[in-house]
Length: 141
Image 1 (cartoon, rainbow, N blue to C red):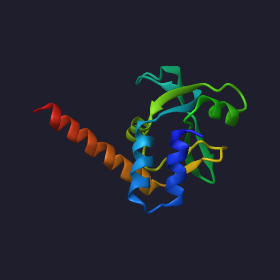
Image 2 (cartoon, rainbow, N blue to C red):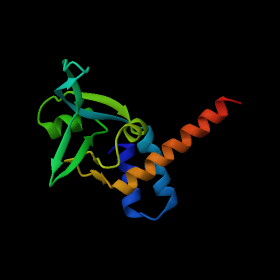
Image 3 (cartoon, rainbow, N blue to C red):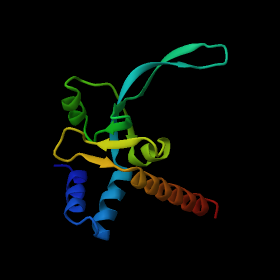
Image 4 (tube, rainbow, N blue to C red):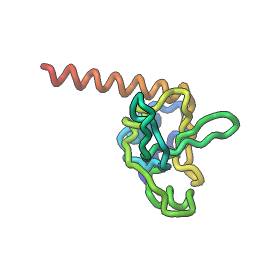
């Protein structure tokens, strides 16, 4: 069981507890996650030039798009049933980079999986933006 698993279990046991919420979300934002990727052709200019690149895997389930990510490479590989390609991103960067329309699932296929709601993602985006603004203000002094 990882530290993130323990923090998530504490949050599940006491969802309204401020200490459990802070412990989980702080750890989430600072954890380095393994995000599975797939190869995709993308257009890189107005002339229609395409290039193959690795992009995060998005899963469609009942017309809802999900970004999946794992806190351990082994968990990713167990879920994928192969050694899966991935990119490593910290939780705060996942938060910054994704849209609120994209749902998240952490550690899918484990006893410690968590789905993040759009409201939760919106709140996390606000937290990250606030922290970045505070850091920028402190650096400018």
